[in-house]
Image 1: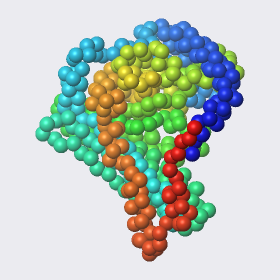
Image 2: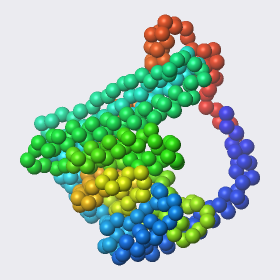
Image 3: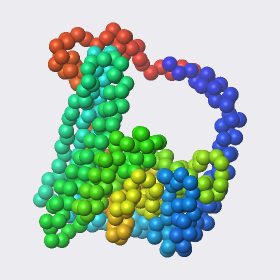
Length: 389
């Protein structure tokens, strides 16, 4: 039950504080935008040297060679809206694109089930009339060492890690499979594998959280480099502060950056298809497997551009512009979101009724034909959305 009157009263109590914070944010935004626009784009090396000399520069960014051209916005590759359909089909014809996504089921003591599961779904689209697209999935149970209420929270963490690592592992396999096909052809367009999320583990905050995933990330990046098949990490509404934090550190500001990189580039990439130059990320992935990223206005409806992460070999090979065309074309097919990721998600997702079936099947398999707990049944019967004035 929600009381509109109490909701309004709560907001009135903090109205001045919210306004003050918004004013501070607007001021910070102006400072970061000014700092970005004054980057030494004609000489990226001087900026990079300053960043590398900063203490504890992990997760900060360096300028790539694309900055030598002096542009912060690379305009959309398609200028005529009337040509979009024709251009989209040309960009994707004879081009294999693929994606992987995952879903999970966690243990629930109210259901009497103390183990969970992960489901991975993948989609391969050959964009050839004579070849049918592929949709498939895998399903795996994740068991605790023994049945114990105490282990429930730890197992949830294990399931989450297993799902993400499974997605990375399957993505590497897709890269290798498609790379072998690509190598066997005398000519053709390189395949592209979409990954829903960050390749650089930017959503994790410390080395301890990253450690379980690093070997799987490195395997994926190595597979991409060795197979010459680009893999890209696609993040919509990115909350990364890598660039603004770098600018803050160089300016000697004490407070941490409060403006996300995507918010900053929302002002600099006004038109659909515009992209930023590539940045190089200082991270655990160095040398041949360094990760670069750029921002792309992938949808005319989205408030912020998407963050696209790629292995550095894609930049060195001069494939970024062609890759951008593939991303934009798939976003057109997916009505603003990459169609391969959207389709892989539809294969992998586990809906409410499917989860209920899992719990029922699990209880029967364990020889327990009892119903859900009385507590859960009571909650489900009472939980109805109610709004009053």
